Image 1 (tube, helix red, strand yellow):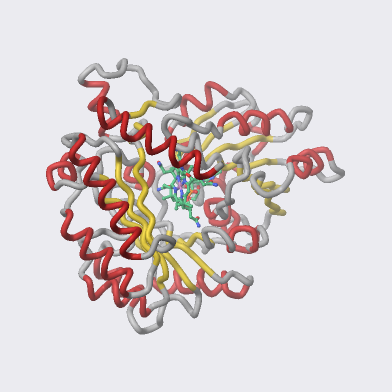
Image 2: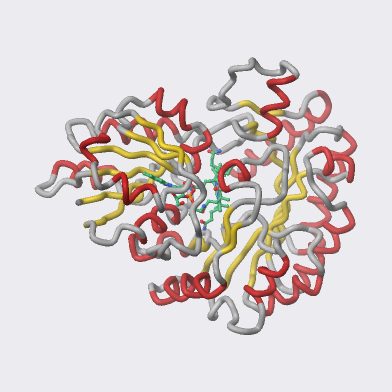
Length: 409
Ligand code: B12
């Protein structure tokens, strides 16, 4: 069977992200003739040529990674380029399968909106896809939405990083490595538990090290753990970064970590080659963090940021402009943190992002908003719903965004 794996286009010039989900799928497709295209990197002619050429694919398996960029107030929709990509497939008579994180969050609505999708998979595709490929013509126009259960990570084969050249991805974010799925933290706005389950499922440290070895042997120089919180669970974290076998094999890497991480663990990460850490406290007050379902406090953010910078890492910190239980004073504190951290700890090496909560289907906030009538009970959140800052906070944020736009022109 000829299978073409396609990452949906971003539709604008932004740094591309290696299609790790497709690499995992490719790893399971032994016996098939597999090729891949990333529409964010390859011009759309390549897809047209592939489907109109002498040996067109029997199946196109498209990964819809993003729905929108969750930016407020100027939101970029990735569905428009996705739709024009579907147009490119007109005239091709094969089976179109869709999946991916963006797809999974809003699978029923996306299936309804885009009639060209023959069948969709919400969830992890490794176990279900090989079976679906046994009878692709049976899937043609079936319009079936398959819900895939979380896979047994010990039973699947490793991702195939050779599906695409790594160069375009390596120089931006680095290549994605996944050491676990799911998330045991119950942050109210987040989709990760919806996508991967409410507990961490860990791969073996040896298979993670083998992935990093593959990246290195394919010429990659940097990687990034795509895991929700790299330092949890602690035993697995220590197994990964422990001195033996040593995780990075000389490559630089980055990860998201919890601000409550013991500081010695930050040092161990630096010793293991980590060059970038990101924190998402999201709120700045203890009460605000609890309302978002988070542990931690401001002191632990400061302590961890300082330690990471003194260990030589770049640091990113993410906040929301408005989060439940926080008002104007908290927003001022976030700006004060942004300015002081960047000026005192290195402007280029310390980034602080103040974003807006984009409410997703499957998150706890979405359910609360339906229950208390802030959105209609049948709201699917595919067209973006935000929790923007209002009043004085909204004005301050608007002024900051305007200033930033002038600086970027
Ligand atoms: C890591 C990550 C990043 C990293 C990527 C780093 C890297 N080097 O890879 C960074 C920080 C760069 C990033 C950026 C962005 N991200 Co991001 N990211 C993630 C995260 C946490 C993991 C993605 C991942 O690698 N998963 C691991 C792979 C193995 O899983 P997968 O892709 O889901 O694939 C599996 C299944 O989906 C399925 N599958 C996938 N494709 C297909 C196709 C078929 C046919 C089938 C059958 C199955 C199938 O099988 C695969 C294997 O199980 C997800 C959240 C999450 N938990 O998924 C958000 C997520 C994908 N990101 C999201 C967003 C919004 C963005 C940005 C737009 C943010 C921004 N404002 O800039 C950008 C877009 C960048 C771009 N050009 O695409 C959203 C997308 C949904 C949406 N809101 O539109 C997510 C879901 C987070 C969220 N808010 O809910 N991201």
